[in-house]
Length: 473
Ligand code: FUB
Image (cartoon, rainbow, N blue to C red; front, side, top):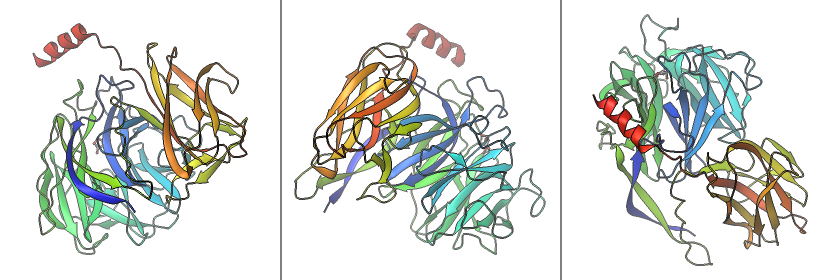
């Protein structure tokens, strides 16, 4: 049995993505979720030259296992380009995601107020459309699944002709299929709100948050769809610098965090925003202390320390590689041959690729290896009781250029995962990566994920300092 000690304090950094990171993007409207013990943040995507919200067209996922080290999955849903989303048009504002009955659902607005839905078997895709047309109209859709499995959709009726005149927090039940309303929209706030509705539950209390004027305010209720208005409680988070606020809250390792965006970092603006997060403090009556925004290494993270695990003795958690490594779930492949997607036997809702025999392969498109030829560290997470053979890394074709090979020995069993690494040389740019499986055993290994760390972008420091000076003038 694992014994968990709580207590070590680490510091994570705001904003999550920085201009100096490889594959940096401006991301906004963070919808944070915890799925299978990991944090996923579903974000809208601001274009680097944006001067309004009209050019917002696709969505990005950030992922973390510890709230300190983040994986940037990049653009993960592009309804205007991906097949099956022909109904989705433009203005892809704030999204949200939810899980129910084996599917992850991604709710995204198109044309400002129409709500489209994508679904996937994993939190990071691949995504397919769950519908053939938009499911409803509401501004800034957000979905909450209660402990009894009942799902609700919320938003505000700014620019939407439902409910009373004016813009309020609105909510409705969703059917079990997660794509149809199960009843009428209900007005939940007496007060007028602007946008950015988000709902979470803590100790049996439902919290409704929304931007009102320049700040985020909140309401409390003992019902997810109160027939009387939810009780207005006041300010939750101050104005976010250079940008109207948009927040979401999660509990992770017994701490609560509020995600938000700001436009005053990364040479940003109102339309070039960056996602941040800070700790939440609840008072005894369930009300919340206004959030204090931090910048740089200011986010306190309480780390649970596993000190003992199973009969095999003490296992230390390996600190993730410094820098921004990019993790890709093995089952989120583009194409495959001779493998199956399988459930992990000791973790609910976690998938691997398995039943792998020699000659099998999986491919992953658009893997970006950085812009220079510096070594790229590459790791795989595998489990097997067998001599697992090896994983060959090839570019653009199952028989394409061999750029690396990782030998896989027995890790001890099908539930004993090990991370194996190698260093790849001489690759740059984006490629379709083929992982090709070679070995003798009938079932070689199960592969959970692979991860790589593109070398940091070389920054022209003179240009950076000049730009900074100009901005400060
Ligand atoms: O991202 C576009 C819009 O900005 C969102 O829909 C609003 O909530 C605000 O964050």
